[in-house]
Length: 201
Image 1: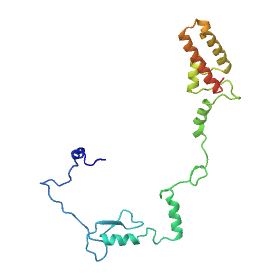
Image 2 (image 1 turned 90 degrees about the vertical axis):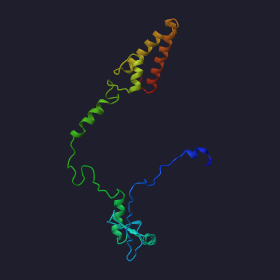
Image 3 (image 1 turned 120 degrees about the vertical axis):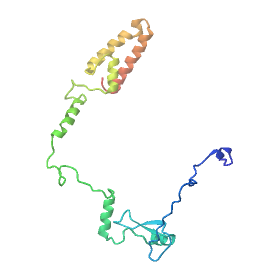
Image 4 (image 1 turned 30 degrees about the vertical axis):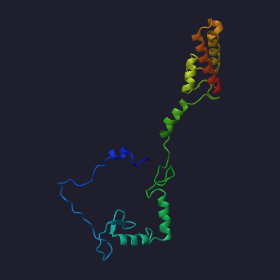
């Protein structure tokens, strides 16, 4: 990077200087919190555990001394440290057990809560051996069926029959080589191949 470029001369940073007529604001500096020290306490230091948000104000010499000896866990025994580590997992926020067997939780499961979910699952069920007359198709399969001039109630046998009829109708030998029919035939074959690759035919 060329730092001598004239483009850098055009960069201006807004000045933080005080306006000429603005009144002077006296800087308030607390004295150092170390006993007997009268130097300004410009460095903040936390007061420790259970006093979050409270700070000492130290001078440079005493903040270094304080930092060298600071121990957040001072005075905690092994049990207290173990509890602290366990609470650290959840960020020291309260948690509750979940489920029907949780203390203070419900003593039974309300079956009506799950009724709507079960009904929706039944409506969206795919075709099975127990329910061969209720096929369900995804959006791409429905598009393929629409290309074959069928709807969502189509069965395997009706898809095969419709495919054979459409191929005969749009084949070049049957329509005199019409280009529009060839394009339609290509779409029909692609739609049928999609259904076949997804084992819907």
